Length: 112
Image 1 (cartoon, one colour):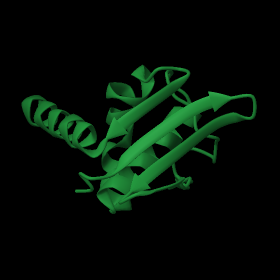
Image 2 (image 1 turned 30 degrees about the horizontal axis):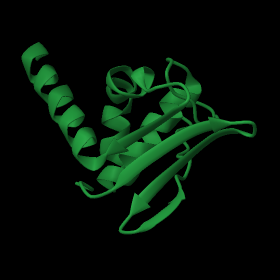
Image 3 (image 1 turned 135 degrees about the vertical axis):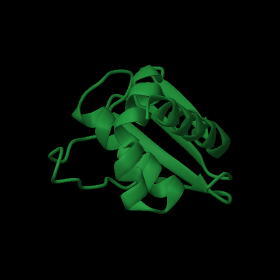
Image 4 (image 1 turned 90 degrees about the vertical axis):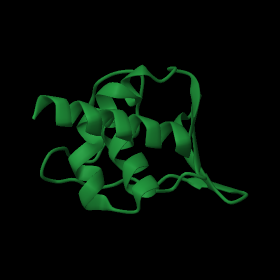
């Protein structure tokens, strides 16, 4: 998994910006299109909405480098992590994302 990456989001007068840092460079996080579930939306967080679902999918697709796996996990990740991010700004490490994924997978095993 992408344990070394960091993800940063902030709200400003222009809207919401989300960036990913790989190595030493911050770049905008790319939107992921999931036509089966949600139409494209701008990123959002601190709530449960299309924008938060889009952010969850985008973070996981980038972090896992596996869109199929991201599609399996993004709704649980939205509920567990993205919906609880600070509305103004936040920072997530790859380790925090890995930990959340592990907890989601453990919970899935308990339910099954």
